Image (cartoon, rainbow, N blue to C red; front, top):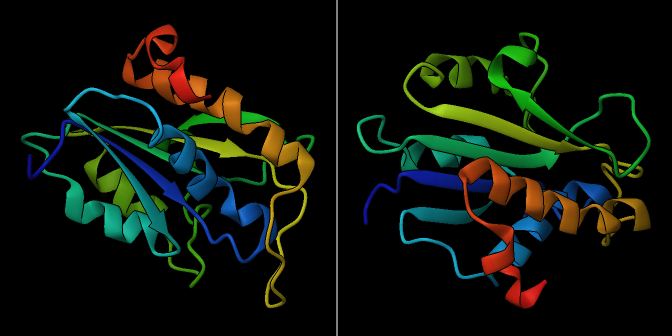
Length: 161
């Protein structure tokens, strides 16, 4: 399948502590048996830009982005956001490119959900590999939220969690 109906993209850089949350969630999702119409990708640092190459509004119906998000909560807290919840210029990649605007452009053709985890530690420019305990403990809950968001029964995919 060239363009999947559902794309789940984990964004972030594991070299910068909790910024590796998105790729860590993707790693867990890739252990599961998911429907053929679902594509799970570790989109890394340029994630949201890369993800646009996987979307065809005629085919793709849902985009779920998993990333860290500073929303002022306790570390490890999870939030589920719609594109409309993102203030202009509030969602940027590692190169400070605004990602909110391109998401707003496609939101009427593709259902977009951003699942964010409040980080405890994000290092830059110094590297620190590994998630904080709070963010690490948020991964199973996030996997359940992702599955619920795409309409997959968690009970039938629990094999590896």
